[in-house]
Image 1 (cartoon, rainbow over the protein chains, first blue to last red):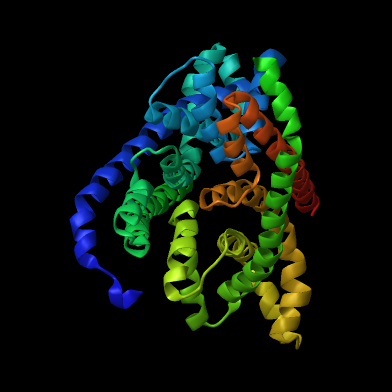
Image 2 (cartoon, each protein chain N blue to C red):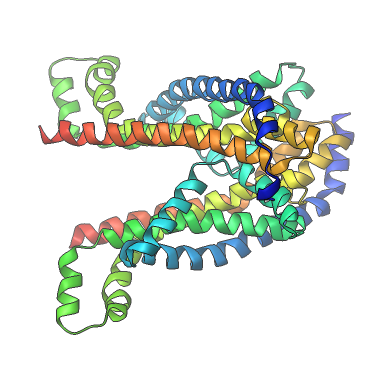
Length: 222
Length: 222
């Protein structure tokens, strides 16, 4: 296999790979932003003392966490049209990724919120801050600080999960490998090149993760 | 129309159960083999010779840095070029076993490293061999830290097994995909698929949570 490894064809397909790398980046970036919003909302709802808020959040989180992402993607891809919603594959894919990652991020944020001492919240109450104000000025700034490393871990997972979008024919990195495989019958070249691009993204994110962990330790040490 | 589709879905229920059995087979098999390999790698990585540590670390990083879908494609499309023709089933088991081994290696390694170095020194100075030290000192204690994330990893494994439907293994996800071509009610079909996964994963998640709670209480009591 290696003696026939054809770099010239990879070179030929490189523009496609870069276009698809960009697609992977924006798809996962957009999904991460959306998932962060949903995740914080779901975490706050789940920790609420009112059952009417905490129960739906719990159902959402547990449902997502105990079913595979691929089934969720297919659920939206095949399910939404039968309800009368017609959307492009990209919108469907981002929607599935946002809802999927949102549940995991909710658990991360919840762990961050729980880690804040009860005394601080009581102090906030004593100084007359409302619920939203306590959330905004005391809980979230600290909780999000602790959660940055696990959130970056989730970002890594998200980038890898976005590979599944190729199965609903969104043109991202894995799809580029598939295209190369089907046009030139060169699976090795196609999928190894895709893997190299994914590894590049992985190591960049891992580097940021290590940096943020170091920063966090220093902040606590001070 | 909805009632008609519902009826035909009920009629294809045996098909779904057969798919569920394939999912259980694939993930169960790779769970058992992957756990064994993962433990060996984890032990070697945390306390083996240096020349064995590096290749394991590099391999784990490589696998953790690429999407599982790409790994499945590489195994399924590229091994035949090396003269190793694999059916979807063995290809899926190999891919999943490897994935499980890599993640379990990390978990085992972290668990072993959480035990103070002094204990190893004490054990070695009382005349225990390094194998005895591992068997009687390190593993029994490390197992407490290892067990909860290990069960969590099993949940991930069951969910990741849905990805192998992309190479044509007829597991639950694939059954859903095939059924939705015939019964165009995505919500219903993939709702059922999700329900079947839920019935495997949710008990495992509850078990993981319970283990985690029990293990933390035990350490707190100390």
